[in-house]
Length: 395
Image 1 (cartoon, rainbow, N blue to C red):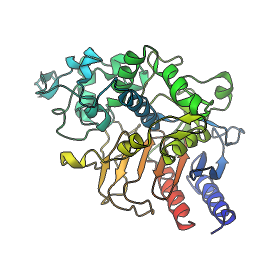
Image 2 (cartoon, rainbow, N blue to C red):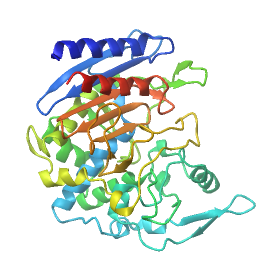
Image 3 (cartoon, rainbow, N blue to C red):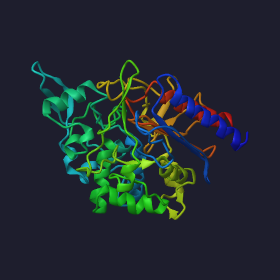
């Protein structure tokens, strides 16, 4: 198939995703091969009821698609021999050793705690096997935060990640604030804020400008607004919902704002085995190691999730029935997905319904960006799956 037919098919899909009954306010989506973008499209508006169109340079809160970038900085330290996967995280960030395992709650709602049997390692943080969670994916985490008056994760504060372990380190895969702790380790070892380390060691080598934990004045004028979708399907713009600016802490797990085009440069770096336009970001063998399913050796896998805050996330899964593991720091599908992604490919997502995939076998990756809560939106997520499926169908 030609690029022209791919362009036509994907433009049509974006238009349909916006203009169908109960569609999305706006979407930006791009596809790249190892060399360059092979598709870039935008449809809809940045905010419902306002005239500003979605454009390719629109800025999004990319939430958890931040994680792979933070992991990249940690892996650079591992390449330099300054950090090891087996290191106890507390050797670098002593505060993490204060976290305890939750045994349950007593009659008046107070948590019952005990120390973990072993210390959390850097590997636990990268693989999400520490026992740390998010308040919107665990009733127990939410109850613990409430009992201890710990702020929400979107406060972008160090207090928000000093929570509780839902199980022993290494016992299960539990998605949570691990990469925020990893970002703290990067900060301690580099002696600078995470955003500054990212700028020097990732953004500049990849030629990325419209990205950061804080938005430049220009980025602010191009920001897409996050919308809330009610159970009825009704969309409401949350015009004032932004992460704290400046953030008290650069949150390695969720804090970046970016254009989709800037993220594509990161995807291309991974597709090219760590090589960027201005030099090498990671060694080729490090990118290979990032892509390994680290859970398989532990007898663990990644399943679906259940919500404890329905306003932030729906209960869901990615491709139920397709076995999945985890790398540094991506979801890894152990078999081909129904959309056509090859086994061992990488993907992840951001809370406000952005999704990416990186297929190193075929040399293609894509990013689908909307700004809607709760996560796994009934229109945006199927739109992403159709987007990916269409790309593979036209190969």
